[in-house]
Length: 70
Image (tube, rainbow, N blue to C red):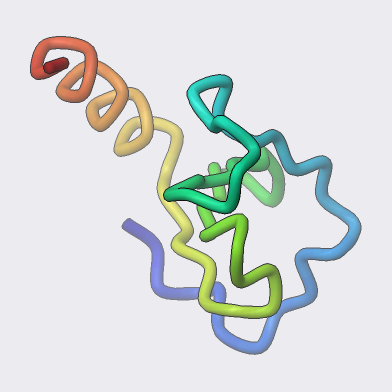
């Protein structure tokens, strides 16, 4: 995980909402690739915190999530 996201402007990134999002205001995340990493935010709090991950950390997370689906 990267700690360099504080105070940065992420408005110019192309954010993508999860395909599992129902669009009814439930639990949703958005991701955007840029600046050498992958950024993740809560789609209900666009001005809230953003988590920055290295490409390797993102790939590990996606692999973990795929192996642990409900």
